[in-house]
Image (cartoon, rainbow, N blue to C red; front, side, top):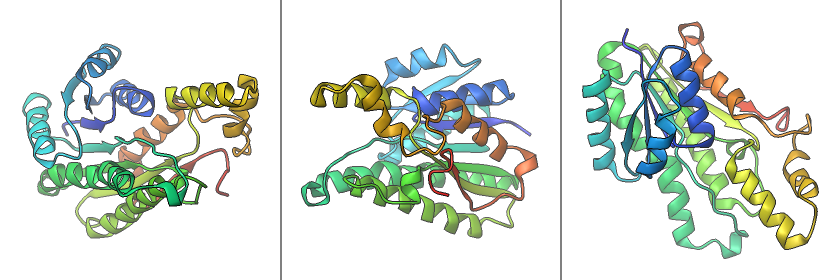
Length: 250
């Protein structure tokens, strides 16, 4: 079987860790994202990776990118829907543009990419789709209503599609990390520290305190779950939303 994985949001953080782990496990990897320069830097650290710069909210661009990637590296048999962003605001200050932005990238972005690869997976009788959701797809967080709603929608999509493709050799699962040690968290810690005049360690505790293990999740831990879900050994795992959070949602 051709092992070609297509990872959106692969230029940094969790997506890049997933791309590296898959390449290490013998997959040919396409890294997708909006910024070509960042993708080129990322691809230099992933053995044999190709890049496809595009916006997942643009369905036509998604279809073109998937077709071009398949021509170069073979049919996509593993899709990792990781592209995303975060908007934080109290519900009453979350405007329609914020709602559209969150739903467009987290839900419709995954829909566009999945629709682009699913027919080929059905034809081959094998495929893996892994949606990178969040603990925000399982529980609520104050001041993140649009993000939380979008991630819950992604988990709902995961469960529904898993049932529809269950007899076709395709599995659909979600991975739900808690706070992960990425540049997003580092930037948030700096902002909190500057705004509140608290030491960085105290600001970091804002995020680590919700994890019963008292730490941030490592990107490589999320990546390891994706590699397993993509394997033949996980063929009976379908429709789950797997928390990787030190027990936060237990």
